Length: 146
Image (tube, rainbow, N blue to C red):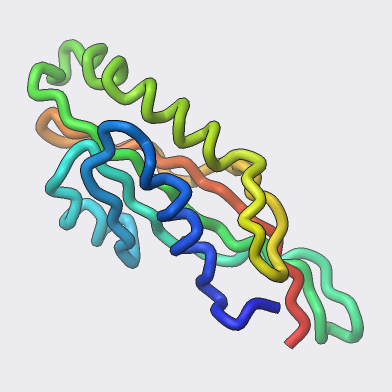
């Protein structure tokens, strides 16, 4: 069991910092907070979403928990409007590929945690005035025995 329950946040941030063209990495509390704070683009927001609890053992004293972390890429392309959004997706594509390459199967080398696996985000992409937020959810197994 890790000393810091949210240790993965810093590890994810460090893992994604080296992506070319990313100008900022934010760590808001929620998607709503993210929509207010992502002023700089392109940027990434890292949001702790929840725990998905699996099987329990030892009369419930130990359980498998999957921490869920949402990684949201924010890109902006003034020329992308409702009629034609091709340019913004084209601009986002290399950064999406890099996020997925860095996160899928990544072993954080932190006590109690296993590799990250991609899961359904549960949140659709969001857009406003030439800005696009693309969410990707990653789960990391944690075996807890409090």
